[in-house]
Image 1: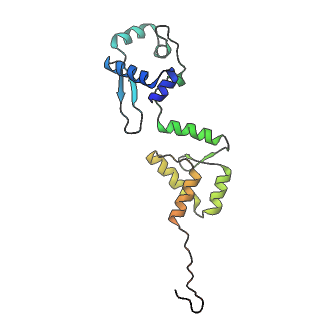
Image 2: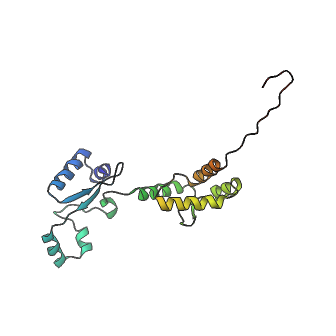
Image 3: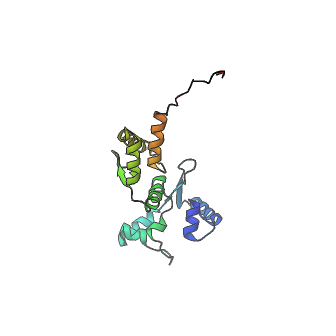
Length: 177
């Protein structure tokens, strides 16, 4: 995102936007839209004459990390221009998971639950394994992520089996219904 670039480069967002526009106008980068709410992917265009020159003297890995014009080189983690939603969610999961260790469950090993959450699900939902597999398959097929997998499983079970309230049709003498 532009915000992330501005933070890494210690520049304002307007400066980053202007620089990207200039680079795109000079055909040094290509921006590909990812859709609403997603950051654009930025691809660096390398002129053909530069490739043939660098191939003779440097390997591709050296070319990638070679600082040009005495610029400071950035670590690979800072150099990344955009991250996808899955990478951000994995980062959030490890931050959230630092309090309690979570283990992967489900066919695709993408449902993360702590021991306490798993025990709670086992006690409250009779067919908990079906829900776990359903969540695992759904997340794998759609790419959707959830903040709390235990809450999702419990919520799905409640939606499928709402608690039926027993109605009391008894009344006291002289009382109308």
